[in-house]
Amino acid sequence: MATLVAALDWGLGHTTRTVSVLSQVLHLEEKQLIFAATVKQKAIFKEHFPRAAYIEIPDSSPRLGKKLFSSLQYLAYLPRFFSQIRKDKKLVQKLLKENSVGQIISDNRYGFRTKNTKSILITHQLNVIVPRHFLIFSKLVNRKIKGYINQFDECLVPDTNNTENLAGLLSQTSEEITIPVKYIGPQSRLSIVETADAEVNIDLLILISGPENQRTLFENKVKQQLRMLPKDFTYKIMRGLPGDEPYSEPGFINHAAAPVLKKYIQKSKKIICRSGYSTIMDLTILGKTGCIVPTPGQSEQEYLARHLTEKRWFLSCSQAKLDLKKIISDLDKFESTLPTFVKV
Image: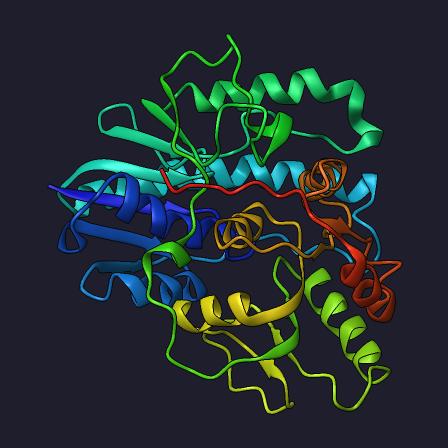
């Protein structure tokens, strides 16, 4: 019997960490995996599971506005969020009729489950941080999300259950969650691949990821400020766009295979990236820190930036106040207290 796998497609983080969970935690055989994946997700999964089966599904990621993710935008997105859960439930039923499936693995897709097949949820968000304009609805939203979590048979949390946890309040369980919760430690696909055999020695690595339009806005802001850096300053910009047409601008790469990305992270003197949880896990497992820039309006990333800055594990900066020269100077003086995270 096969295992059916699907991950949320808001950026690439849910996809990349699923690779580690399947390999390191669940030890599933590649030939027994069926991935329900978008085109971009398939490009990531096939790096690690080339002999698995693939079923292409539509992109469900939101498009954030060019301005801050306003209260009205948040309200407008909620119907789509619940609609996607209903669509996923129908999709699962269809896929189960067409394939012999023994269990389902879902990374943050709450509708990707069924009562009659063992369903495992991967999430670090046992608590949801709502935008500050909607704090009055926090209990209601969290009750709803925990209701979705309880519909699964088991929950795997890629974090530790102690004071040194990465996700802070996000990954703390409660009595409202009634299914078994297992803390599996931070997960990164970079820990299961060899480092690329290549000469790499750069001053700055910038990892750009996340949903549009904010991904492009972040990239454009970086481009403008790169011109102000010294000519002998070396950098690489990872655009987070697997499967896209080759990009000709020097220093910019659409996507790097995991061994190459691992090499760049290890050998870069300074790193700037989004405060997406999977990116943070990639860096910390490799013992690296940097400056994190939350996606505007994504309350989870904004919380993680505050949490990790307060612990002095990372520096942070808002996208609106992005200043590469200042960040580089601040990183020169920054002494991180980041602990060593041991793979579980």
